[in-house]
Amino acid sequence: MAKKHVHLPSRRGFLAGATSLLASPAIAQFIPGDPLRPAPEPEPPVRRNVSGFRAMEWQPYFSNTRNGAILVDTVSRALHYWSEDQTVYKLYPSSVPLTEELTRRGRTSVIRKVEGPSWSPTPSMKKRNPEWPDYIPPGPDNPLGTHALYLSWKYYRIHGTHDTRKIGRRSSNGCIGLFNEHIAELYALTKVGTQVLLI
Image 1: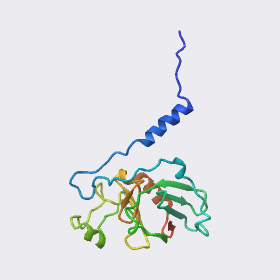
Image 2 (image 1 turned 45 degrees about the vertical axis):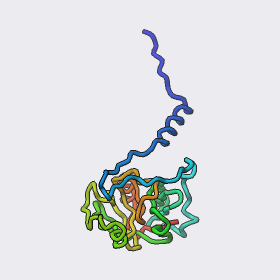
Image 3 (image 1 turned 180 degrees about the vertical axis):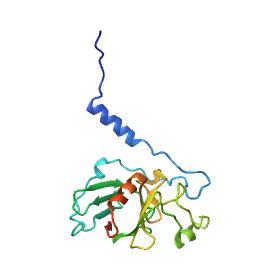
């Protein structure tokens, strides 16, 4: 019987394929006519720099990791998490606020955790978007996704999203968004009292 030759891709070929996959545009999940899922806003072209999305150390940002620590970098659009004993480190891509005016920076903490959150627009959101509903129950249409970490700053959350095209973009009204699978993981790791710093 003849020996069959199986072609295995080279490391270079594998990396080239992975790079082209990463360079592919995200699948848009907007629904025409739905004010909660509008078409994505155009952004200026950005140089794709994988090294810009990198692991970081907690020491420059926190004096300790008591109760765990979350660092949100609004420039690189990434969320970093360290467990209290520093044995767990996670790095997640995130969405960030649409504008500088909507962006809040500084220290806060997790004060409440909700699985299956409901959502209501803030007074300023309702003023800007009077057509938005007053309340959306938990479920696939909820802008907070499957889980939410409520921060000590009023109206600010770290939450999931069912609209995956928002991650990595300026797309929120002030909150920090994660893929639903990532917020579920972060939700399990954090506790009430987890430190949060937005830079």
